[in-house]
Amino acid sequence: MATEHMPADTMILEIIGFVVTVLAAYCLQAILQYRTQRNLRYKKMASDFNAASYLLHLTCDAVVELDTDLRMTEHTPALAAMLLRGRPGATLAGMDFTDLLAGAAEAGRVKEWLRRFEGCPPDQVNAQAFHTHLADTDSNKFQAEVFQVMYHTPQGQANHLIGLRDVTDQVSLSGSRAIESMTMAARSYTPPS
Image 1 (spheres, helix red, strand yellow):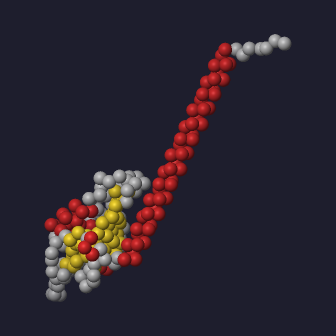
Image 2 (cartoon, rainbow, N blue to C red; image 1 turned 90 degrees about the vertical axis):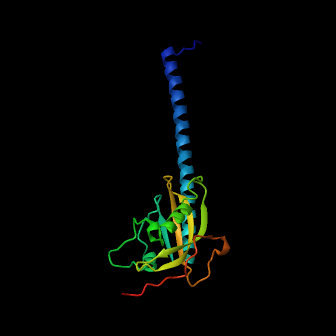
Image 3 (cartoon, rainbow, N blue to C red; image 1 turned 90 degrees about the horizontal axis):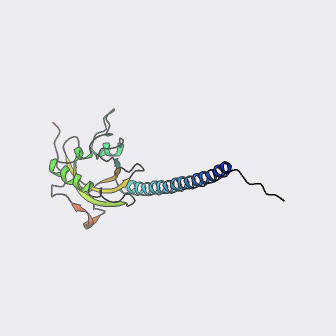
């Protein structure tokens, strides 16, 4: 019985087809594995963000999200009420958070504290608490406790979830673990004109 031999050209095409199929399968598997890992990371990030957000909403008077430039990502009615900025049409969205602080020196210190974790790895969640002084629209200054959770968005940007709590007439939740920004009278009062 005679065996037929394949022509050399056909055999080379078969080998090339086999190699291309194996490479395509390997690439497809790598892409699917990458997407699965990315989706799992995103779900964990979303879960961590939601947990921090819920906890801050339970303990704070106002919760705001700041972008990389420390600007508020959306209007927060609770913060507007806290600062007496509840005029119709007025919004806090896009406003620099440090503009709400009592003075330039205070703003510089708070900015430094908020940016403290920016060099940390994206998969690491960082949190801190500190005291600062906010100023309302009547220039009344009051002490506030700030709870910060810095996180990274799926695009890799360092954002901040900030919980604010007026502690003028209350006990601090963070106690001695909070960083004190400066000593100032508990609340200054500007009489109406």
